[in-house]
Length: 364
Image 1 (cartoon, rainbow, N blue to C red):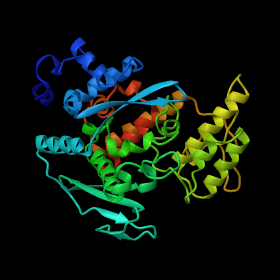
Image 2: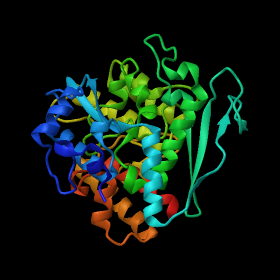
Image 3: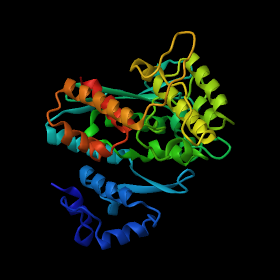
Image 4: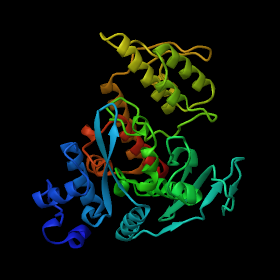
């Protein structure tokens, strides 16, 4: 059953019932670049992920990569694999379930919005689209080049994104589509192609900061810019909460999705909290929150409201996930969600719960 046990062999073999890294395993992991800044929870989650995906860290099938996080003032470790590792997991999961697995032709989009089934231009595509077919069900995903490209300090592409931008963008789209098709098997691990942008200058503040219950997750957001303007980045560079408030309204006027607006609002609340240590000041929230009755708004103005508590936000996320799980006929809710999230539901942040609900919703 456990492929990684036969791959690593001997004292490095990972057992299915193992709950902690053995001294031998920990020594090898440390030699691979995992230093003492790694948190115990990150190591435990990595072990669980290796067991669930059956990928072997000692054969370099899966990695725990540390990147400096300015807010936490330490390295934050994120598991990642290659797109080949994703394919191995997907094909194995499909075979074990007796499901057929296939792909439709990869498509690339040019800057005008026209889709092509082959990319011949020397310029990078605007986006790529991959559709995975699992047991007759289609799971399509689009990856925008601008969201995933790895860059140098000056903003120029770097690494393989210079030589093969169309291929790298397509790999990111394939990873997204495979994760939609196999949420239980691929949740919690990202491909190296997707994570390349996390090494961009100052990227750790945008993509790898610690996510607490009730906070927006920059990695999970489906939108990073509106009409070519990165409002979220501008908000983080703003000088005070009022400036962020103006950006929030401009982004709303430009048609930003609720999740994106909520992340801008979160930045504003951080500014407000810094200016008023006794408690966060009111701040306008997104249309998604307004729809749940947590604020009053009109078409002509945004009315401030109290910040949604982490407990209420978590409860709303769980309720959304339960509704989607009921719609797809998930029988064992607790076990199924724990496997998909890579952690107990009670420990998962609200945005991770919402991301899982989004992943399984197409099957409803």
